[in-house]
Image (cartoon, rainbow, N blue to C red; front, side):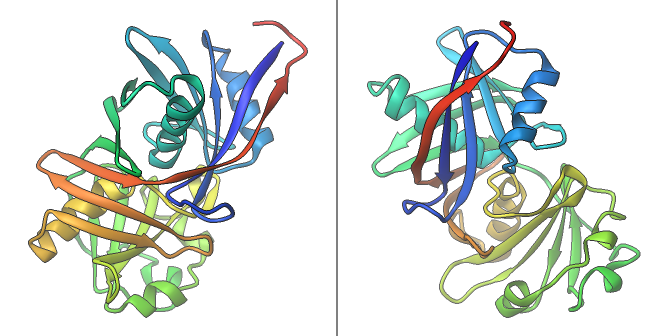
Length: 264
């Protein structure tokens, strides 16, 4: 059995930057353990699978170790594949997912994701904060799945070397660190060691919390963000109440075939 596979660099227009995702279009679902094994074999932060559903698609996302509820960069990568390879006449696509309906549109040079926003509330700094970070954050906030740590300076985010063994003690899917920026509205980094990802290069789903947070801090609905991982990526964002729009570009790195020894 052969399957098409694409590897797309998301939230960038240049190869070897942004966040790479694998995309596997399907006609029908594979067994979950097969999809998990494909994601493990790809060894990227996310592999997206989708099947036709009505006039759109149902999408699922897998890290090398688990299925997740929401992934931004792999949704952007999947939309790039649909818009450029599967149906170039499309201007928008609708995905159903474990996080509800996700609408994606082509808008000039960007692909724009429409995702559910995450609320947030301030909480005390968790135990092990000082062990996890070599610089003490100012505040901590809990969102739908992640913890957000606010730091004083952009340089704190860039230079921080978190200790993964202590990040794993935090009760959260992922750990966001963020600060205001001189060139952009804000910068961030994202860590998810419990999901098999020490540091994710560019994380669309984290911005479902970051965008409402910084829209509140800066009293501004339109925001430009940079995730300052080693690869880095730029996100063009808008806060719209209970939704956030996250825009970016994508570049195709590789297309190919998966060869499975069993038909499904």
